[in-house]
Image 1: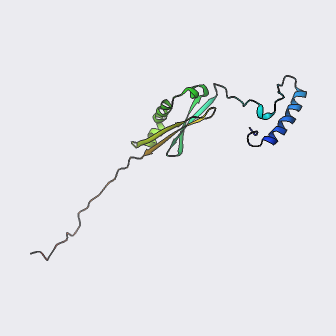
Image 2: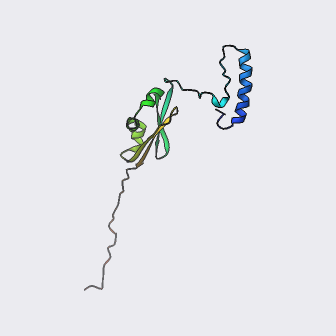
Image 3: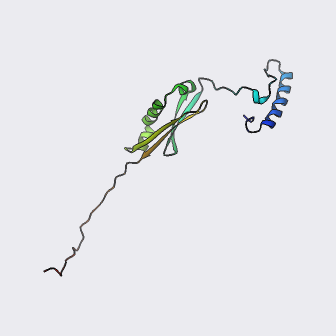
Length: 139
């Protein structure tokens, strides 16, 4: 995890770690490749990932899903699942969804962004004046 940000330091740590580990435990598999050539760790297929649901930029809910299912999930299904969540329904409350977007990254949680315009009730109260104006200049 340190290699992309501090390659020289992580290379020194890897060299020290691999020489110490290979001498003490013979079953420990350390290749002689430098740290920058090592494989990135893989996430197991049954690992629980999340679809984070954001409304107008605020995180409101999340859906837990297996990594394997998340990798195969179409964008439209993710958006539909997010719009059916009770917290989302309560927040939208008759508001108009202007835009919904699904972002997925490989080996990472994904996000559903919902932009909506709230349903606003405008109440205009017209009152009758207490004393109506009377024009005296008209005969």
